[in-house]
Length: 77
Image 1 (cartoon, rainbow, N blue to C red):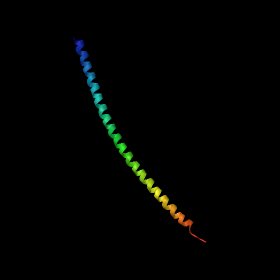
Image 2: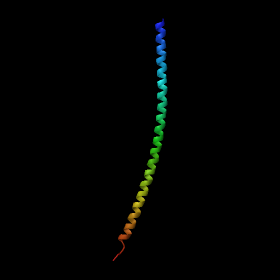
Image 3: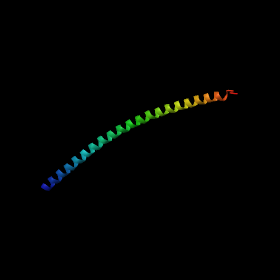
């Protein structure tokens, strides 16, 4: 009889241990999911910023090309 009670106590301890691990893993999963959401938000912000920089660079290049074109048409002789 004591062997059965000991086995049940050991089983109970193992179950408690596993439930504790499960709880920790679920919290870790939630934290990682939040970090992923934050990283995705940051990526979107950086993509937007990159797009703005690319547009600005294109605008500057276009203006420089127009200025250089005006010099090409000048008669400097």
